[in-house]
Amino acid sequence: MTRTSAPVDAPGADAWEGLVTTALLGTDRRTPPGAAPGPDAPLALLDAAAVETVRRRAGLRPARAAERPQAAPEDVRPALPPAAARRLAMLLADRPGPSGGGRRGAAPDLTELLPQWLALANARGFAPPPQVLPALLDAARGRTDLRPAALGFAGPRALWLARLNPDWRFALRAAPGGGAALPHLQDDDGVRWLWQEGLFAERVALLSALRSRTPATARDLLASTWGTERAEDRLMFLDSLREGLGPDDEAFLEQALADRSRNVRATAAELLSALPGSALAARMAVRAEACVAIDHTRSARPSGTGGGIPGGATQTTVTIAVEAPHECDAGMERDGVVAKAPAGRGERSWWLGQLVEAAPLGTWSRRLGGRTPRDIVALPVADGWQGELHAAWCRAAVRQRDAAWSRALLGDPSAPEAGGPGAVSLAERAKLLGTLGATERAEWVAGFIAAHGLSEAFQLLGVCAVPWAAPLGRAVVDALNIARDAGSYPWSFSGVMGLAERCLDPSEASRLDALLAVPDEPETASPGAGGYWAEAFQRLVTTLRLRAAMAEELGAA
Image 1 (cartoon, helix red, strand yellow):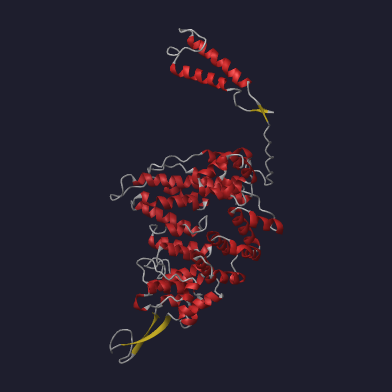
Image 2 (cartoon, rainbow, N blue to C red; image 1 turned 60 degrees about the vertical axis):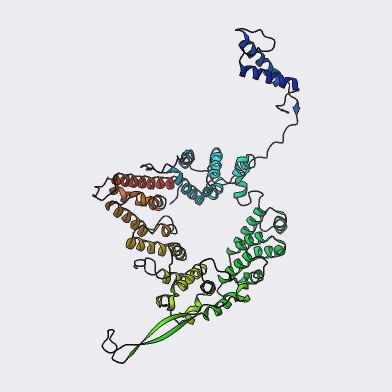
């Protein structure tokens, strides 16, 4: 039996409060009960408090014993190697200091190494030592970006702990199935019960798990309750169909085009346009083809002009002519075209962009004389429509994951326009790069940095696979070295330097030793820039060697 901490009766509580009040006021102002004023009053107060303490502890009513918690589940994964366990304890013990905006110094940032350590440990399938789970949960509570990797590594025992400590309840919401274990996906009754009775987060986790294994089962489960779901829930559930999206989903998505919610209709249309063989894509192709065509214009050239054209001859100039829609009819709206243009945007250009980005990219080779994507992008566009047309093709290439069109729109990385005629922004270029393979992506960004430096490359580096391929790593280090020798403001490159610490291949550390010395500063350099650069390169080299040690301790290649 356990005991509660409630006193037996009220008088005891009143007596204790009286002693506390006497202690606060002082025995020279208030005499303890049963004692005389004078120098012995403090001792009498302590004696009375001791007696009352014993009385309060002894006078507790017995209470029913609490139910013992269930034992923690077993984690069957292999234990961490001892060296890796010590490294994890060190990383968890490190706390980020206040961000004062000053120099970071030469010491590596251990808080940025923890995500990489967790990624390596998860890839190797290790289980954490039980004694680090509280610190691991505390770290995940403070950093939402750390939660997926931290909770994946922490495993089932972390969820067991989270149910016992309110401070860690976030883990039950963040971990798939954290609130309740997902049924076995072959258990039809369990799946059906959780889908109908579970919390929203549990239903999303179930649908995502089913979609990644048997897409048709997940779609059929969603269809079974589609008509009774709330609009905001339908939108979230529909978004889960991006995983494993295929032609078999078309019939369900076509029905969703008639949904009551505009957002649901727009999402269904976007998913259908990502299926080039869908009926919606074909409808959009017909509409887009009516707006874009080849225009063969013959321009006269007088005799004797350049270009080698004989006198009296004419030259044919091939351009792309654009005639944007004059209205947005009901059929266009049903297929996901938003009729109302954003503020400051013309209606016709707004409608045109939506039609072109939803049309299959294969449409344009057939429509524009059998030309390749690169040839099409190189054609001039009449009447100032080039930016609008190319931007829509960019969105289509990203949506349809079309590498050939992405290459054409990116252009040569060394081109003066730094990104090709179709890339309207760095963010657009980064999305286009995401459709290419990791090696090709790294080579393109390396060429961009070699031609244009690092000032515009930060977003592009963020889409490259980690660790960076050797050509990309060399391009980044060479550009940083050039910036240092030029006496550039070192803090302008702090973001790229931070990326390099996380993304450079650790094997590059030995090649960087020559950059650790403080360089001679040119007259135009910022005061103290040389020392800052030396610290930054020292931190980079130390971080790379720490990452190499972490990988070795985890047995990772």
